[in-house]
Image (cartoon, rainbow, N blue to C red; front, side, top):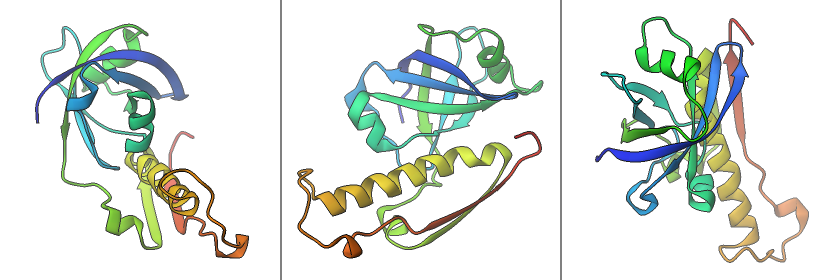
Length: 168
């Protein structure tokens, strides 16, 4: 995968020690990911990239050209330190998609039990968003028009999420 330029569009406190960073990809057509994948994040002035899970869905990226990363504060990560101490809206950085752990369309077609600890929730957020989006499209139809099916036949997402954290 190639390294692409991004711009920070927002930085929010998701918890006392986790920042949710939203990024806009400059060359949108050259960037794609599956739910659950991560990126190498290259912060300006930081030698070694940080690896962060994508905490949003490919569907949201298709709609607005942005995706989110959940970045936990860490004394051992210069990149994480940059995000928590210096990262601001408008900053430029670079990313490269990585990882072979992701949810396939087949995975999302079956009931799911998702288990995470702490920051491990990040990739599951993208998976759950994708599950909801794809089932909503299925019920509405690919063109967005509502199908004439009784409400009892509408499928709701079948997923159980178990998550624990030391600092909520």
